[in-house]
Image: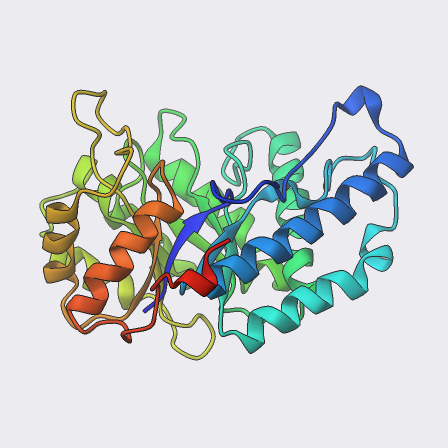
Amino acid sequence: MRIGYPCVNETLDCTSTSTFRLASYTEERLELTVGNNLRCLRRILEWNVQHGLLFFRIGSGVVPFGSHPINTFPWQARFAAEFKAIGDYIRAQELRVSFHPDQFVVLNSPDAGIVERSIQELVYQGSMLDLMGLDSTHKLQIHVGGLYNDRELAISRFIATHQRLPEAVRVRLVIENDDRLFSLQDCLRVHAVVGIPVLFDNFHHECLHHGEPMAEALRLAAATWHPLHDGVMMMDYSSQAPGERKGKHTPTLEDALFQGFLQDLGDLDADIMLEIKDKEASAHRACAMLRIGGLLPTSAGAVTPSSRP
């Protein structure tokens, strides 16, 4: 089991997704920005390893305008060595990484232009994992997309688009159940046709479900992951922020709720991404609970004086 957090380390003084305005685009600025982003990404991964946090969602903007037509700079060749070094480090440290493309990636849109731009974004993000030399257990996470007043047609369009994706994208793609439109059962229907793994989100399931208890839902999602090609199940974890609108994530880990979730998880293996505002701080606490429960080695996620930044 690995515990992780998404995109931004609140402790370090750098970001791996620094960008600039499209109107300010130059190849020189792009080259400088990508170099800085990759150096920061390496720092974040090293910090995570020091602190036993072995699951990380890389931000989509490592390469600004990575899938935009304006970007014709050969960044894949220019930064091949840097990407390879990061991938070598990920494999050596047994880290797992993923990407979660932004909400504009909608494979089931009725607009052909949106679908094509979505595919190009997935190709761009998948190519970074390929440059790192990582296998298909490192994933690209998306939602089914929009409902467009016709659930059956929306699901059919997703399936049709999925079947024409490049193989390098298709083997990495996973779908997440969401909190308003497409439930776990909808995602399982897509899986039954195209074999795509379902990345389970416990909080979204609490918001939108068909009566499946959490323990059952976890097992249904886990069964969609092929151990050899996909690795163990990835999942997102959060809970409802008190006093906020339905679906708003909690600002920090609620210990009692997480303990209850671990009981539902039982003996299932899963890599858990904490979608919680205070990121690595909650990840440390989650690791502590897992160590106490015997689900992580004593040293995993522990902070010692020598490992503090």
